[in-house]
Image (cartoon, rainbow, N blue to C red; front, side, top):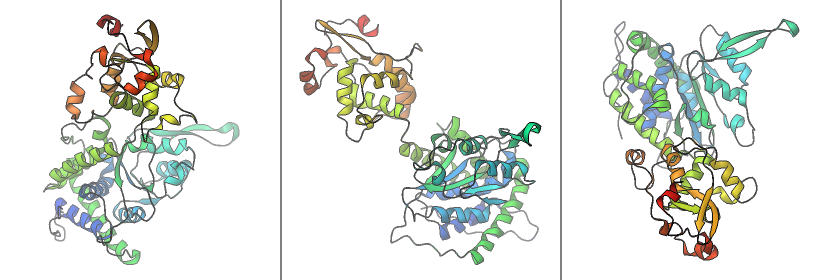
Length: 424
């Protein structure tokens, strides 16, 4: 466990020591919050500070406290964040219209604290595309929400700014478009040996607000240094994860001390944790199951064999797609969303089997999609999975499952098939 250094308060009128101040903010969280990872304390502290420097960044990460069950400390985490951020706006069950008007109409941009977000995006709540659009758009500077204002025929189109910091808490998960823009803290109920100080708003809110005011003063000290900064990202952190973490790493670099090192370690740890928790789309699940459990190195398989193996997988969704087991038509429809290396939709092709011809799929058609969309194969690193193509095997191994072969004796491809036939 990494213990923050003992805080050192700056004297009256003296420049604030950024590293010491962040240590104090982290210690304040630790009094009332039990987070699942040490990296979470680092991320939440940096997020609190970044909200005071929002105008310095092109994007702002959402922070999401999520858990599978109530009583896991999500709302308490949001309460502590509330005391530390500027211009907080508590928006439990707020509508999209209320939120974008608050951001657009305020002289001072609010920091939105959205509790019980599962009531909007949960499985029983249906879709809420306007609010999802607001949260997605507000992640990046310069993207606004367009609305008609006025009465009757006198309406005009007006853009409402949406760029603001948003912290959320809720049960379950969130739409993928929001998760990918978020630092995700997976909360859990405290164990018997995990204790926290009881939070008393009348007393502790003032303490948090005092730290908030010091964060605001420190932000003014370092604003010029942070604005336009391009922090060095940890190896392998690119694209959307880099957008999410760039503001937090810039804050850590401005604070100095051990915060730059701790921030980058937290960045890598939380990104990996998010990937492990990511259920991915149903299409990626299909591609991954085809690679790891169905083809298993075979160069081609008949559709009947593919379906048999998919339906035999434990804890897989293929026996209940649209209320019935996966069919060849469903398989075809899902795979056509992806393309081959030649940029053609993946489609079933003829496979010669003895004296008959069956429809099926070739690994060579799936290789490009496997490389681009699937996580690394079991036992392989991300680097090796990216650099190496999925290996093929000889056609003699195409249908090695004896139970399937016995049920579909004509499904085994002919051993006389030439490489040219397999690649056609």
